[in-house]
Image (tube, rainbow, N blue to C red; front, side, top):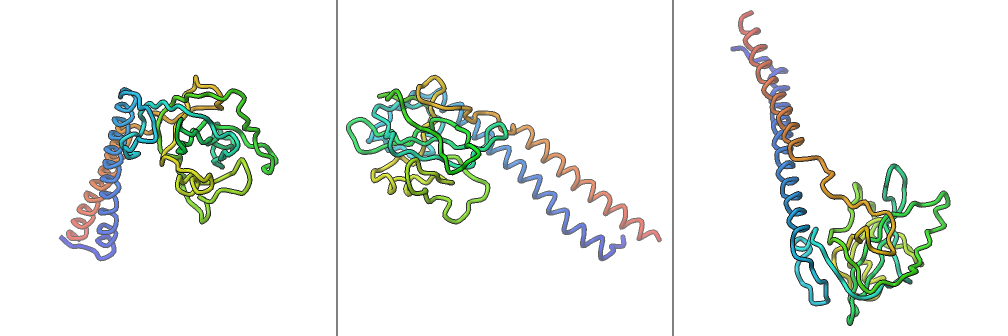
Length: 236
């Protein structure tokens, strides 16, 4: 069998690439299975009673139902900027909730609000009914695709806009400690905004497996074409 230099080089470059893409999709499928299983277990687990003594790591608490007693710090709120809902730009409202009998707080994500045409005019975030109990779901802070330098630094004034929520930095701005996660406020809780919390509306594991199958099929086709072409040249 005669191997041509350029076709062989192309084969050796693209075959590992196609195989890597296939295995990457299989890995993504496994990650999604674990993510969905964690979410399912969190929703069926016993409700967490959040207190200053709660020490479980965020990964162990993620997606669990939670209740906390205390009060909102309505004078010091954060607006997580550049959040999209139905194609519109807005903010997530992160309000500190100071736990009863302590100086420690957790940021409660009260939902999404639209930004107006004038970005210098921030939404009215006043709390009309001050609840002593909040209920919701523990989750990590929303991420971003590309994090720019300074994105974690909150703007001056209140409410303070910020691109990326970092509990350590926001804690320094507030002057009291924060838990390293947020509570996504339940839809039936008062003093909230639009709350369409991400649940299982992600690409299912089966879709990743289907993509992996396509990449492996392309790798097989490439191999067959390479063998066919090499034999063709050999017979000439």
